[in-house]
Length: 428
Image (cartoon, rainbow, N blue to C red; front, side, top):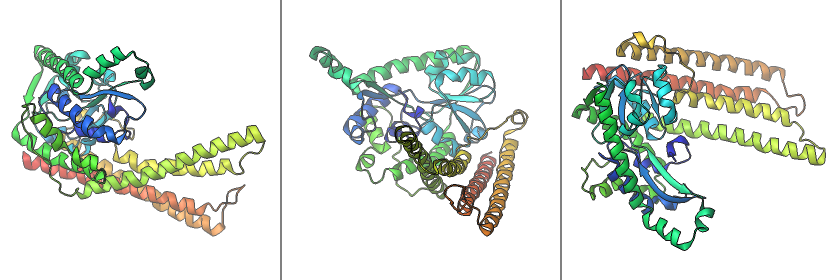
C-alpha cells in the first residue's frame, strides 16, 4: 500500500520520503523498517492491520516528455504526475504543479499531454513502458524524493495461521523483508535506466548547484513536518537524521542533518490555512452526517423528522464549499487549461502564473466585497430562514472570510511565482 495515496491519513511515514535520503532502495528500506519498528509503530497509524514491513522505492527522479530539467528553475510551471506524500508537498517550493494520480494512470497522462512529466523511480519507466514517451531524465544524487509503502495483513487471518506458518512469517518480517524488497526494487531501477538509455533519452545528472537549491527550497517542508509533530516524542526521535544515521550504518553515503530553524513565513501561512479551513470544512461535513443520520432515524422509526434539518444542511453545505476554496487554491486543485503553456518559454510561464494569480486575487476580493455589501442589506431587512427563523446575515458575513483568504492565497502565490522567476534569472 502506498501511504501517499491517502492524503492526510499518514503523517509520520513521510520521514522516509524526504529528498536526498539515499542512493538505493535496499539501504533506505532497511533504515526505514528499523526506524519504524523502534519508533513509528507506537503512534498507531496502522491500527487495525498487521504490519509485515514498511519499505521505500528507489530514489525518485525527474522524467519529462519535452523539456530537459537542468536547474531547479526549469521545474517552474511544469505539471508532474506524483503519488502524493512528500512528492506533492515539495511542489510549491520547487514551483511545479502536482497531479496526484496512481502509477497506472501515468502513461495516459503523458501520452495525452496532460502532464509534462512524472516523478518516478527508474523501475516505473520499464514497468509502465514510459521509454516510448520520456525524452529527458534528470537524476538527483540521493533522490528528489522517496515513496513510503507498507505491506499489511488482515490480523484475524494472521492470528488463525498455524504456529509453524507464523514462525516463518515472523522470521522474515520487518527489516529483513524490507531489505529483500528494496534489493529487487534496485534491480528494477537498473533495468529502467538501461531501457531509457536504449530509447535514446537524454539523461542529465543534477549538479551541486541543483542539489543545494533543492536542499534550501525543501528545508521548510521538513521543518513544517517536524513542527507539526514537535509535541510527539516519537517525531523528535525519528526526525530524518535518525533515518540517515541508520542508513549510514549500512555503509551508505552520509547526508546533511536537517537543522531545527523556524519555519519560514510561507510555511506558517500554509500550515495555519490548512488548520483553520480544514477544521471548518471537517466540522461542516461532520455536522451534515450527524444531522442526516438523526433525521433519517427519527423519520423512519419515530415518524418525527428533525425540524429544520434541510435548512441546517443548506447552511453547512455553504460553509463546506467556501471553506474548500482557499484549500483548493493553495493546492492548485482548480480546473486549468494549458493551451498557451506549450508556446511560452519558462520566463513567460512564470509571468503568466503571476498574472493569473493576481487576476484571481482581484476576482475573489471583489466577490468578498460584494457579499459583504449583500450581508449588510440582508441584515437591514432581517431576512431569516423559513422554518427555524435563523438570521441569514451572519452566515453571509461568514462566507466573506474564506473568499478574502482565497484572495490572499493567490497574492502569496503570485509573490512566490515572481520570487521563483527572480531566483531563476539570478541563477542564469
